[in-house]
Image (tube, rainbow, N blue to C red; front, side, top):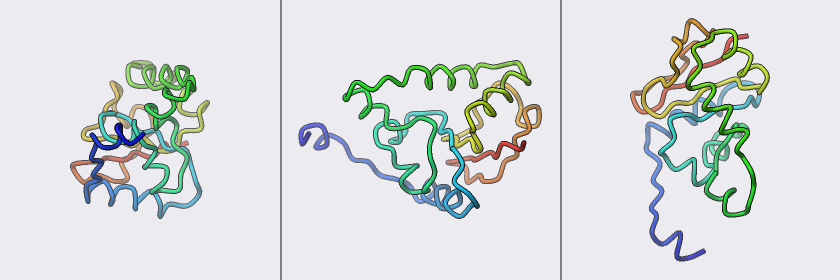
Length: 134
């Protein structure tokens, strides 16, 4: 364990802390889908920890080291990102009880937010958060 952590230096930016603070202050504890991976959440489930919300998929590095299969959730994320079907994307969000989309950087779906009833509720040029309006 020590060798793995010795070579990493997870640093969470002030902008990301602000985004997580925004989610923490929202009513309820909806499911958040973190997209545009590449940040530390794929290693450690810190968005869930800092916000008090459930994330749809995070901490994949830890889960894979423990043999936990998360391929179905990865497939849902790929389907969401690649969908060009408005009703299909809305159904995926609804079926998986996803209430917020959390993007590192820019919006990352092929369909425009207004096409799938998403409203941008937070943006600080590092993180953008969209609420799924039902």
